[in-house]
Length: 333
Image (cartoon, rainbow, N blue to C red; front, side):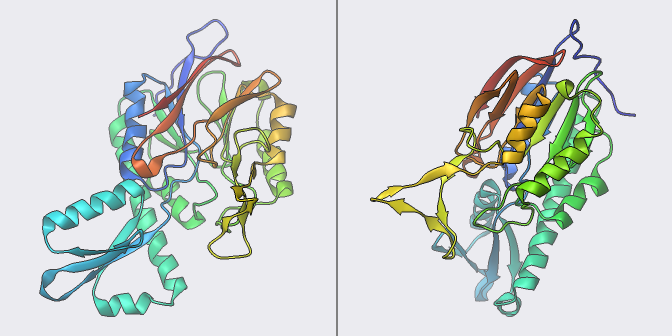
């Protein structure tokens, strides 16, 4: 049976949370996230979406036992086991997947996006299943649970690994209300508003509002709710990013008088929910470059940002008690 910490009452011991998001398949960044439970002495790990990586790199066999691959615009000729291990280590940090294949197999994927997507999902699901198993192993025998969910970049097929692999310490929090202590609950929604990249789990404002309303119907006291919403509130300073021209592929930055244009890419439905429900705290991600904090009435809303591709874990410690935030601290390492 899961171990629960009796905490979070107005007169009791505070509950300490560690929050991070937008790891995008990066192996060292995810391991740092798991290690944060012990390092920061927290009671729960909460992840805010975007577990999957963004790229699949074919590693093609050449004659003589060597390999070739292309990464970030550069050709790589891999001639030894040591070079292969180092190349895969770079891919793990970036969050990319790889598949070793012969030239004929490689050619079978060229121009066949359906096959590529299928392989991508298989590799991404395997990595996520490994991550869930690692979390179960690392957190076994502790009271710490890890709350995981998808974001807009995660496919539904890959996210099935959460329910298929989770046992005791890992919680699939997606679109659910889950108690985190004897008073507070975590409310999790992983969708985002439409983006120029046309990612798998984008929703309209009306659709996001409908999901929020449906999930909140199961919350007994909204003031004791922790909002784990992947998408940040609109025009909050937590959602500021480059405006991209979606009429070309890949989308490119919009420039005016030689300067890039920035805008808020968050959700009005999320803003409305923060204003209406006044939860204990709102924790958000999605926009990697918009690390920050703002207020909606009594409610703090925060985005820790992300630098996953450098192997850096940007995170957030939030301490709650009696429906209030009694402390918060941004982390990086």
